[in-house]
Image 1 (spheres, rainbow, N blue to C red):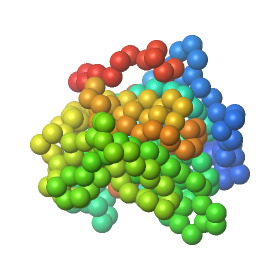
Image 2 (tube, helix red, strand yellow; image 1 turned 30 degrees about the vertical axis):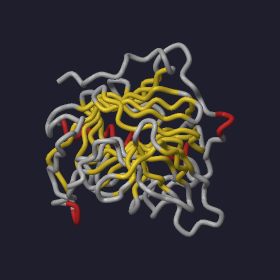
Image 3 (tube, rainbow, N blue to C red; image 1 turned 45 degrees about the vertical axis):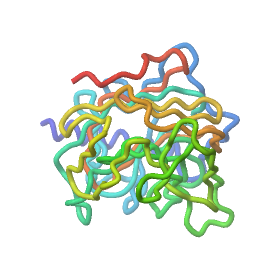
Length: 287
């Protein structure tokens, strides 16, 4: 019975997709900013104002990758894609609470569990590798929660412009890390690099269950709270109340939001957008 109900919810989510197909990219000028209180994308019963996209099935979800049961979104991970907001948003404090499931898939069955919150998304659905809309990714991966990645189109002419500036340093292996007060660098289509959160383990390995010495996210099986404050061109990222990354002069400064399916099971119990300065302050997730 529960599987039947979950499947009905999945079909309900999928049926929203004709409202938000490839031609429906919202202009930044029409982006919504929460004003008096939170916009609850996951409202305790269902996903409000979202559609789904998968690399192989496009706007259909035949395997039930995205389902809601008892107010919790399950992303099974069986495929590449995302659940996407129909509307574009700007100037918000996003709160996402998630935990990993047990299931991993295909060629990432033994790799680090991987997902991401993609913000300021614009351009075509599946514009990056047929999977995701071009965007700024706030990484959700074991050992790397809070990294920034520029998700850009491949072969597009012209590509959707994406850029951000960070205060940076280099770790032992020469990888870019965020360092408050460090040298300012701009990352764009010509200088496309991942900006690691400040404490990412230099011995990180792409293996299932990896945990770094300084990781701020909760251990496997526990809830983690991710706060992303996007106001103007500034993006601040907090993991369980710890500020782990920051970007300045981000472009674009508005767009849709996506939660990825990337071959790992993920559960989400909270996804909401607050007016900046009016949200509950970043803090560890309650278990």
